[in-house]
Image (cartoon, rainbow, N blue to C red; front, side):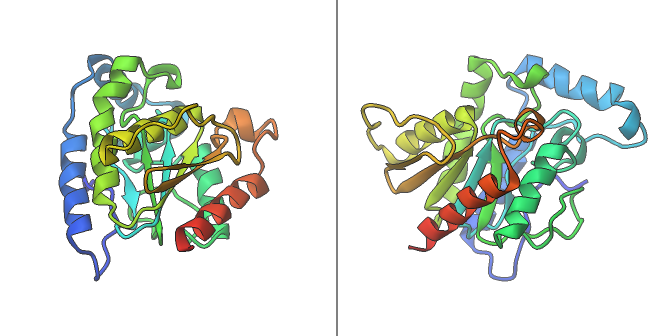
Length: 242
C-alpha cells in the first residue's frame, strides 16, 4: 500500500511536493505510545467483517487536491475505517456519508470512498484529521492532540490556495482555530468563536465553517442530515470562490 494518501495531477506544483514530504513524516510517526499500541492492536485483532483485510495500522496524512481552496477537517481516523484502508474518511459509515455530500456538491468524482485506488478524486477539496491515529473510544488525550498539532499547521501552510476550513465537530473547530493562529501569527479573536452547525468565523485569511461530525451518532439520530452537510459544503465552496 502506498504511504502517501494524495491524488496527484499533471499540474501539481510545490504544494504537492510539500504535502508528500509531510505525508511521509506523518506515516512514520510514533510519538504517542497509547495510539501506536491501539492502532497496531486493532490492525491485528480486526473485526469479523474485515477479517480478510490487511489493515494499514499507521497514522494518516491528508488526502485530496493540492490546489484545494476548501480544507475539510475531522477528528481522527476510524479504527476500522481509515486505520484499515490507509485513507482518511474511507471505508466507514462516516466516510460514506461525507463522500456522498462531497459528490453532491461537486467536490468528489464519485459518491463512494472504499479504498485507495478506487477512482475517487477530489477537486478543490482536501481532507484531513486533527489527530492522525485512531484513538480508543475516539477520544485522544490532550498530549496526543498536541503531538499532532504541528502536522496540521504545516499541512495548512502547504495548501497555499486554501481559504475555507470546514470543521467537522467541535474538536476539529478548536484545532482549526489554534492552527490558523499558530501558522499565520494571527491573534485569537475574543471572545473565541463558538462551534455550531453552520457557525462561521473569519480567522486570519481563512473562513471557518462548522458542521456536526458525520458520525453514526449524529447521522442515525437525524441530528445531521445529508442536506445539512451539503448546505455547509456549498457554503464553503461559495466562500472559497468569492
